[in-house]
Length: 144
Image 1 (cartoon, rainbow, N blue to C red):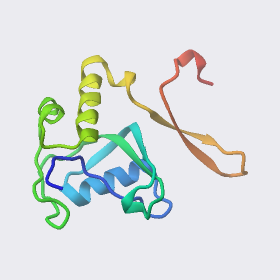
Image 2 (cartoon, rainbow, N blue to C red; image 1 turned 45 degrees about the vertical axis):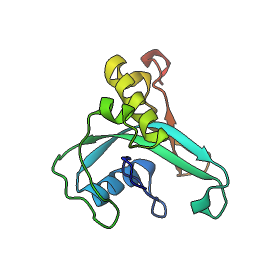
Image 3 (cartoon, rainbow, N blue to C red; image 1 turned 30 degrees about the horizontal axis):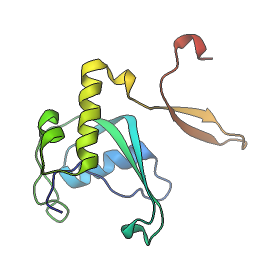
Image 4 (tube, rainbow, N blue to C red; image 1 turned 135 degrees about the vertical axis):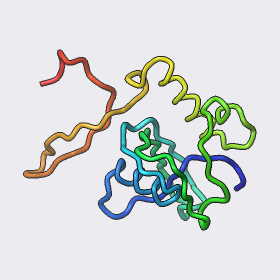
């Protein structure tokens, strides 16, 4: 595919969502980053790359810690920093990339607290186990 897209890939066994996103961005671009939030989830049934099974694609918001690009030539033809407004409008991207760019522009304009799904670690029902629960921020009056 010859279109602009965000870096991404598969999780390693028992790897958390944010860790996967940070690792994949580094492997594909050489840019170090920090997980900020989960933005959205794409679900596709009968996915050709998943042996006809359903596929979940989780889209995260990261903050760059470095900016120099040293991209993987085996995974990318080109790798550049683009303006979100340009990415949202160009015909040289995928519909999902354009939509995520629009979502990020909305977050920049009205605050990421309006779009982010933050992660909270909470105890699981199984002794000694924990969940990572992703949700919109609760007002501080509702937090324990």
